[in-house]
Image 1 (spheres, rainbow, N blue to C red):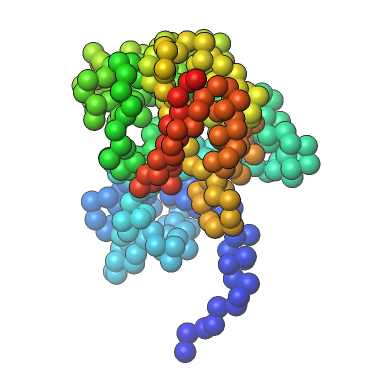
Image 2 (image 1 turned 90 degrees about the vertical axis):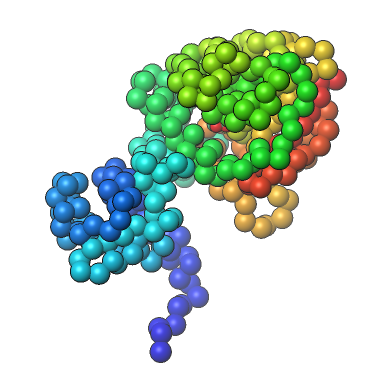
Length: 335
Ligand SMILES: C[S@@+](CC[C@H](N)C(=O)[O-])C[C@H]1O[C@@H](n2cnc3c(N)ncnc32)[C@H](O)[C@@H]1O
């Protein structure tokens, strides 16, 4: 008879979650899943190639196997499962950069969550002594890791999001906070008549040249560096993808005011975000809200909260488009 699972078990697993995150980080850092991408390998060679202690690595893999990440392939060999393969650097939707990014930049600040809940101050700001994005842009390696982590999350969590989506008409589409251009490339490759602008902090947006060249979009998309708190380019359609959730209402209002100032008459604004459902059901937005709390001044919002925020800045919410991903597209028009 299989042992019964005590009802308290889910709580025990939640409490132990920090160890699992670290275990996944080690797998990502040692490139274990990458080395298993072509098929099962024997543990001994895997350990010597990664500079790991064979027994310790074996125990790590054995712990992660029941989570659906590895399989015992017999004769001392291990295999990676389709889920575990997302930690491979060669996976087209790799979450390896996200594993490195979260554990190298979010994990230690999260030790200060108690203070955050007492004071409302993001733990990362206390830990790094400055707002998180200010810290990121200080070093090109941090920018590169942030961009590749975001691109991986976009590719995996938002896969298929724009498949059936028709962009509102308008000559120029500006993606503000568009990072390395992944989102604008996705949108414009389906809408050949529109031109684009990808706009982000100068240190971040320079990576867009490579992404756009790889997608054959160099001639149609301009790459512009700047701060959306100061001035944004003129356009007919604006995109804020996963941007407003990074900022509190006052800061978001300043971004929206900059758009209002630069926008062409009748401009549309697309806000791409996960919307917090009103009830207690599980939703990605509720988990990401914890990241916002610990790392940034932002927050995840309900539809009513977005409508209020946008309305206060002069944007009418026309409709909310559900997508195959956990994110929605809020279509708005500037009054
Ligand atoms: C969560 S990421 C979203 C990236 C991308 N839009 C996406 O959906 O994958 C937020 C982006 O806002 C950018 N950002 C932060 N502060 C900014 C500012 N003051 N002006 C322009 N972009 C900024 C960051 O560099 C980052 O690329």
